[in-house]
Image 1 (cartoon, one colour):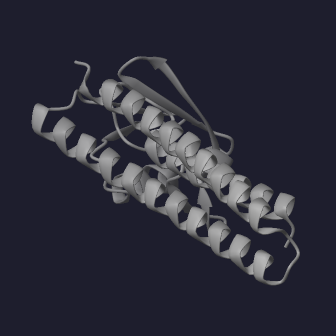
Image 2 (cartoon, rainbow, N blue to C red):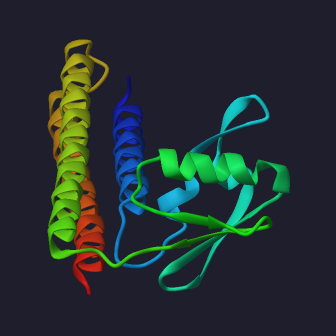
Length: 186
């Protein structure tokens, strides 16, 4: 692999790692209603498991309420069942056309557990980013051995990969701090 290929691959993979973290953090419950809490719930409808966001529109008309409007009202019971089975601690109420979910405020103990989970997810993302750095450094060493890049280029490449690592670790930390602040606000 060339210098530019190694660098581009590392950057793309690190970006994906932070995207995965961002998506994971969106599913963590805060004291507020958030469509991300239920979007990824898989509903058994039409003979297959389908993400809820493909079967209904999901909105938050009030800070403590999620409203789910199924595109096909015949799936409403399946959606309700999937939310209950999803073990999210949410209690859906069905009026035949839409499902309302009142999001209860979080206790201090639950908030602390959520923050701990955020820290776990963030650390997983950091580890992933560091593993990508290790892979890029190995690729740089291999490219230098194959004489496709010079020793100076290898060293410069390793420095650039380290800068990318710092940048993406900082992004992961910022994402986590923002989510922690949302979870801890009463």
